[in-house]
Amino acid sequence: MSIAPLTLQANYWESFELQDEDLEYLYNHLLEIETPLTSRELAEVLVKERIRFETEEIKKQIGNGATYFPKDHYKVGEKIRFPALKWEEGKIAGIRPGTNPEYHPFEVIEVEFKTLGKRAFASGVENHPLNAPIGLDADAPDLDLQNVLSQHSKSIQTKLAEKFKTVPDLVQIAGAWFPRSLLVDVNIGHLNLAEAVLEMADGGPLPTRPILEQIELPTDVNLKLTEFSMNLALQEDERFDEVGPSGETLWFLQRLEPEGVRTIPFHLRYQTPANMAAMENTDLAAALNSMVFDELETEGDQPSRGNHITVSLIYPHWRSGTIPLSKSIARLLPTAYEAPRVNFTFVDEDTSKEFPGWVVRPHRYVYGLKEWYEEKSLIPGSLFVIKQGKIPGQVLIQALKKRPTKDWIRTVLVGTDGGVVFTMLKQQISNDLDDRMAIMVPDPEAIDKLWEQTGKARGTLEVSIINTMRELIKLSPQGHVHAQELYAGVNILRRCPPGIILQVLANQPQVSHLGDLYFKLDETASEE
Image (cartoon, rainbow, N blue to C red; front, top):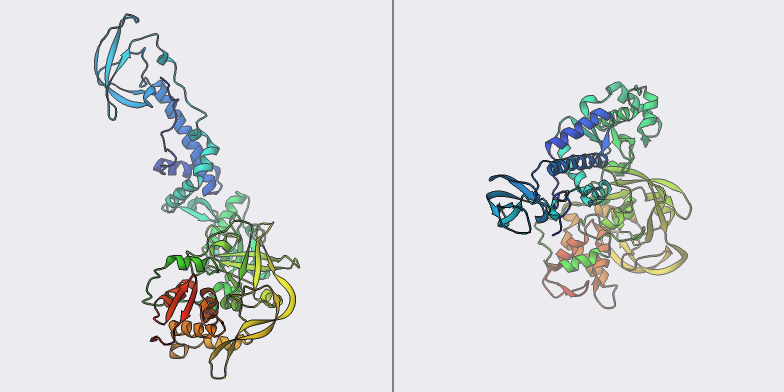
């Protein structure tokens, strides 16, 4: 019969829960080292301590006489564990003499188990294979620090952060934790000086240390603790914005951030229509979402592999100088532990020109491309490539330029009466296009006036969709429109995610679904 070496209980780390003793240990650890630690670093400290503690407990169990060995004698009522039964615990219910001519006189103990019922075992037998000492399985994966961290660090970090947030004296900044009561004092004078330093740097971004060097905050205590204290004071002052990507703390004066970062650009603002019926054909929505990038679709495009992605524009983002922070785009851009806005650097891959970009996480868009769009002569529907930079905090961007040619392309025109017409005109094109998304806008200011309309003048979303559908169908020899084309067309006139467009189509009696993502308009049917 084989005996399993002693180790942790099955699923020990899967079912891990932070105990008060763990919290006290980590709190005291922070006090002892006087250095803020991230959740990841604290998770490693905690796992290391848990392994040490559990190892000691196992060693105590091995040596406390509660393990069954055939050589030992036992008493009724005693509880012992059985290595050969995966360390099941049983209670001795009775003892009787044993009879076996091959052994010296011995006893038989009857043991009751909670899950195994009643069983009998030999006792007082000196020569038996099971008398071999039981050792600790020091090589068990669940007792290996690096193995545990690789498998369970993220879940432990999450539980640790949730627990720490309930402790009033523990504060967090840039992913690191420390007791507030031991922070270096940062007063309003220091913060005013920090504002002046950032203002001289055009608002930022600046790391904490250069700010400290200019405001004469004492740094002889502990530089990391001083930085943490300053970071927390800046975070709690609404004048300052922490804009660094994960692992880097950078500060910016909020009032000097671009307008399109502090507030949602006009063309990206959207309010979900009231009383909108739910979309029944989820496969149809998924198919359309896979073709576009839209920050309003939280369950939209799925992250793809690779270090780059080709993006096409819709009018609202083209006009705002932004790109959507959809799932597949977001994975290529810097993010942060908590900061709502992240400052980074775009690098034009063709010219090596650098310019600032901003990830606006709460509203899921990226700002800073207005001048670049104009410089590259991009239009709604143009294609360009976003790549992960080789340097942290940098994102490569490349327009898909081609030799300028005159091509027939959908063009939107606004009449003197404010009416909108989609037509096919020859236009100068110098970039690769998404054929279904491409729409030339010769007069953006005229389109913007339509966006500024309110009430009856603006009309309902349903009317905008049907009117746009009618205009686009006129340009199709087949007399139908693809949902992706309609999505691009509707967003010339108003901000609307693809899923809502499909919902509207599904509830219009004059609209017929032809299969795939093609739709037809029946003008003879009654219209609302």
